[in-house]
Length: 233
Image 1 (cartoon, rainbow, N blue to C red):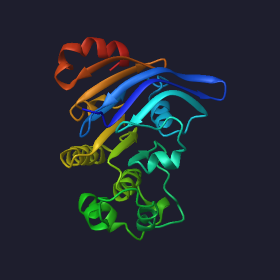
Image 2: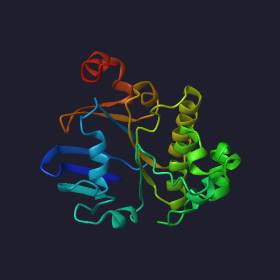
Image 3: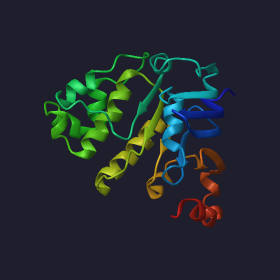
């Protein structure tokens, strides 16, 4: 079966700095995977390189079998892939609902505003609030919700739980479970291993811009010592 996302021998640079050194992994449709690793391992750069947001890149990135390594970022997005960066990118001068309505429709089947508000009741309550007045958790929900409205079916989520209160992190975990049940494919970069561990089908451990190891959900207990060595968890 053709993977939803297939990355092979991906190299990337920021200027003269060579940050990815042959990243290879694949993601099947409907799967949730997590890129694990210490800070500087290349996890965020991998997401950015998939989207064409690094200075330069070479290798292969295929989305449903279509090679995108030479495409501009906006063309990659229109193939149905949504990227939620760590900084979230909320427009402070716009209300929560205006932020939500800003991105274009990428494909048929995006969530309606009503469906999004059902998933994120906080956003319904804060619909008229300016972006700067939203809490960190509400901004994170809004950043993900914008992608869901576009019709993207492959979601790249960068450090979604970072700096958020435990109650909000739990809501985000429930969101990932709900999206998985609806057939979304999700690639998460996470420092919070306790958040990622019960959610992902597979885990790719990165170090020095490469994928060193992969584990399935069922293999985690047997590899706890090795994960501790890689991650310091």
